[in-house]
Image (tube, rainbow, N blue to C red; front, side):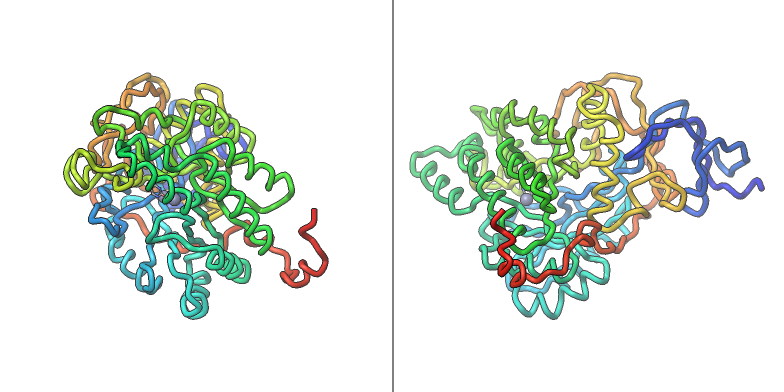
Length: 487
Ligand code: DUC
Ligand code: ZN
Ligand code: ZN
């Protein structure tokens, strides 16, 4: 019997989306084979010393090695980004294959595979970004892609090179309904942002803080309601990404209480940053420029509540890494770059889970089951990776994090493994950090050191997302005739 178990983790306190209990975990061939009191021999035994054990994180929203249209460069490729993810306890990442306007999404996916192949320390799936939902793409490319492992995509209501108009959004939502795909929506009203940006620039207001002024809450609120209304009309699940404000959250809450299939994501930047962080005399405020922008302390508190009460199903990093120094990142136009030309995004792939464990679980804003569900189980279900990923159960991949929660420390960028020269959370006091990280039964991080020689992450084909399975079969015409919407 001695060789039956490859790795045995003894004395851990296992957290899942529903439970928290003490048990041992046996791993064989990269998969969890048994959970309970296990006294068998194993090739390797780790004593978890009553530390918390969670499933490896699933980061359902991060940007790595993505093309840009302004000569800026995403600081992390699959190698540095996935290494950083691993150190932060994330064992599955889902970055984006971007369809260029007028281009093929299939070609974009092939190209993205070339960027990822052999370079990722953790497993990965791909979202698509649809920028041009032409009939050709919707008929001849996407249906096969959806059935062959790429079942979710993001669409944008803002950014000149990415945005779709309402007709295109309706077309994409109808397609998603017919094909069982999940649509993620970036909800901000682009015309409003363009108009306010022009007004600010004409008045000479170019500093980083005006980024937040140009993208007000009211227009996130309006776009969120618009996206929800279109999904209600088409009758298809959607997921609103990176929700930053109480007002947008209330739109989502209302939709959910009407029984609509509206899912939502928020991110660390909306819990730990505010618009004040963008307000500096020098250019430092550009480090916090992301869209939607960070808001107010009140919004932060409401977003915490939305995590606790279940308005948000997913907590992602939206890791969009740009360096502060140099001319390919935040200072792409020098140290006086206008707010509207600063590359959007903050890094956070490594800090996502430790921040939430420290400030969420240990400061009693959410319980540990909620932590597991929003960082791992739910994104896995919503993006078609469950039960292979996102839980600790017999038959699931042995993606496991053993946490060290015994010491307080101040976060510093020098601890991190991304290729970015700052963290927005510098100096924050934390008490939780992954001590041991295991991917498909292999140790990748042990006592703060990378212990795998080469990147072993593999591509994961996504099944159809769980929410899409709830779609009813009544046609739009049928529902219009029965006046279903007058509720
Ligand atoms: N906003 C996005 O929509 N994507 C990347 C980064 C950001 O700030
Ligand atoms: Zn976005
Ligand atoms: Zn993003």
